[in-house]
Amino acid sequence: MIYFLIAIWAVTYLAGAVLYERYIVHMFQQNSYKPGEYTEWMRVHGNVGRLLGKCLYAIVSLPLTAIGNEGCLAAACVMNIMTILVNIPRPAKKPLVYTKRVKRLFVTTAAIHVIAAALPFIGDGCRIRTAGVILQLLFIMMPFLVLLANLINRPVERAIDRYYINDAARILRQMPELKIIGVTGSYGKTSVKYFLSALLSVRYNVLYTPGNYNTTLGVVRTVREQMKPFHEIFVCEMGARETGDIKEICDLVHPEYGIITSIGPQHLQSFHTIDNIIATKFELADAVPPDGIVFLNYDNEYIRSRKTDKRVVTYGIADAHADYRAYDIEVTPNGSSFKMKDGKGTEYDFHTRLVGNHNVQNIAGAIAVAHTMGIPMEELRYPVKQLESVPHRLQLVRQGGRIILDDAYNSNKSGFMAALDTLAMFKELRILMTPGMVELGESQYSENKEVGLYAADKCDYAVLVGKEQTKPIQDGLTQAGFAPGRMIVVDTLAEAFQMVNAIPDEKPKIVLIENDLPDHYA
Image (cartoon, rainbow, N blue to C red; front, side, top):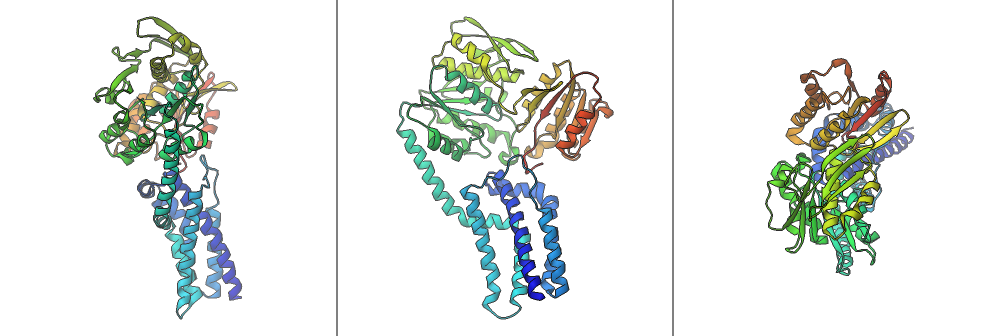
């Protein structure tokens, strides 16, 4: 009987361990495989609640396994089954991608388990029982075991990364006529990338980094898999979570042009100070050669106050001194219209299906680059009119009898307020749905409270996802005199949609979905 229980214990332990490790590796992947960000996630969002809940039954199982008699083993098997149940994967917004790196992590952690479990069999004593105790301890320490496996794999990972980086660099060297445009910013860079690529495609064969391929390895993958000899322009989005990230990408692609769309207090959890963010974004300007051009959004105070010795072309909608300024902006639920002048002072009317001043601002930046690169304003009017909303970035979606303003991608204060301004212009019943903003470090409470204050007269209802997460927004709304009966706090996004549906149909509804927390924050 005892050996049957041991077999059951081993099978249930293995199943639970694989599921728990899968979750940990998923979180490690969503933290960009960066130990610093991952450990910060564990400290702030994991150890006390989520991770403890996922290994609680393993902790209970530990003393039962150590005692090891039939009754305790049977109870330990039950605890292992409970561990399996609490670790069954739930649907993820961004599922775990089984990359080769992830597979190597699994292999290394498995090897650690095998070696550790084999140690008791070297000497005398209660070998099976001791091995079981060791395995249970490894299960409890799984969040740190993944870090150890990553450390062990680091030399191999670096060698593999270097090979791919060198191969991408070789491909780029073979295309000396290729014009490379770097795009970075705390927000707006993805929209500008898409808008600019669409406008440049009027005359050029353009390749751009797809989706969120804005890390060094994302750029490498784009170059190795998609770059063709006929491409004339490469629009390269450059993301950053730490100082030096932009420089690393620039050292690979050597941009001739650079666009800095915005700077703001985003990712303060890893950057720590706004000065570090400014310096990192301007790594792109530093990398542009003396005969290159840096395009700067002069509506942004951080950008406007930073000096660079490179040739600068400015754009915006507010700064009257910008080289390319959109003005006479009119925004309706059906789109936006604005005017711009070329270098000779000739005025042109532009229309776009996109809504919101910040979309016009981003389009102005794309027009500035395209016109500077030789495309006449007249030729840009039609592609501007044809621009599509970037998914989840103030994307206007008509759903039955209501309108959705989908601004779910990684919110920041400036973008949040701009989205609220857009919501405020509608005559429908205006509903804000949000879990607030994250990764703001010590500024998280104050920034979220500020948007709560700002939102009070911009929406008719506020549906807030997460009681503790949205406490600053609740405080801001309350301080601004927002009606308590129109502030609805729920636990999940699914409940939020249910509550939106339950709000009385006083008139047609428009729902602003502002930010949708990634899996490691949800």
